[in-house]
Image 1 (cartoon, rainbow, N blue to C red):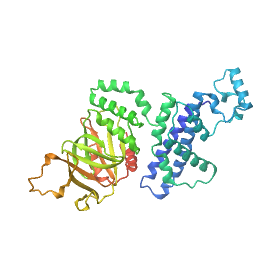
Image 2 (cartoon, rainbow, N blue to C red):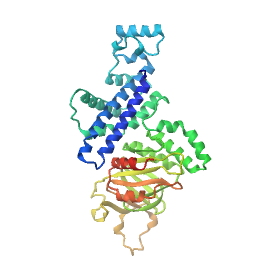
Image 3 (tube, one colour):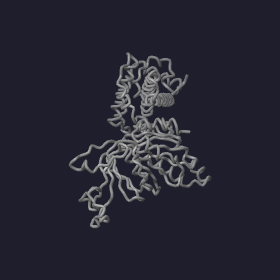
Image 4 (cartoon, one colour):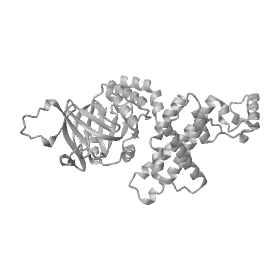
Length: 414
């Protein structure tokens, strides 16, 4: 058997996330308790394969920089093996007769060595999650695992994006992403040519825009795939980038509002966002929790779709009056007007319908939503999409974003 670091690592990483998706499909389903017990075997394999894939790919990067970085210490066995490799003109030190006597660095030490390389940058948050992953792996390998399932999910949340971006940057085009992202980038010219032949210019423009947004926001996703993203900075960068384009987006909100054309999205604070809809000349505010991006098959007339998930906002009585809150199907909101100078707020219920003195031209209309859920979806106008999404958002508005990702993955991917 002959496998180099790169191919072996990629294979393990892909198998790890395949097992993670199987685990999630069971964990977030309504299966019987007996069936749900099987999820732990998939989760166990996910941890083992993902950790192994990362460790081997780390060693691939070390090997690229210098073979000497691979070894825990350069002892007599390593020196003899290196000499034998040179004399026999072998490709790898692991082809020598001394391969079983060579000790490579541990997972933790490989991270420490990568950190000292000038061209490699491992964020503190990624490093912490990798160390957590290693601890899960050690417990599984050496004892009876009694681990906190929610903590494991937290560790693995968004990890595929972080790994894909890290390895693409430090290994290059030889690295094949966990998602179909690297394949999407590789085939962009081919896709554009096919779309042009089919006179699908809008789809070509939309995919070009989406790919630029994915690069800008460090999100890894390919053709006919979907992904749930909870990193708020990545979400903000992605949404901002697509709205910088001249694409026209439509949407429906989870409380039944049909807003028509969405022309702007803005991050007002760390997690509070607003979208502006041209058709009803209003701003809709919400607390962002995550987004689900769905890219259908590239060579088709189908629109990419982005579902936005909101989170609960605590009602601050000093700023928002409980007496003015409206409720629809469990969704709390307040409709208010803010002066264009941003120096005054008037709640809708404070305005008398017969009051001709209120100057609407000096105010802008806002609706602030306080309730978590699948807030809305965005589709590119002019392209086909599932017309049932509006009903889906309204009916499943209280579904968790991760659960919706699994539901969509199981039902809409061709």
